[in-house]
Image (spheres, rainbow, N blue to C red):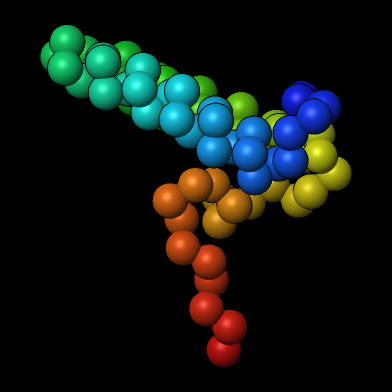
Length: 70
């Protein structure tokens, strides 16, 4: 778990790192690796949120839109 970054900053950096690696895997025609990396990203992002004391949620991940209040 990062200590100096906010959870938003950490998740953005994590997203950017994994997106780059996933894009490289797809470019190399390694869809299997791309899926593995996507799964790893999701697990790591959920663990980071829990480590920050938050209830893990996919809605906090970069690129996700916030839920609309009813």
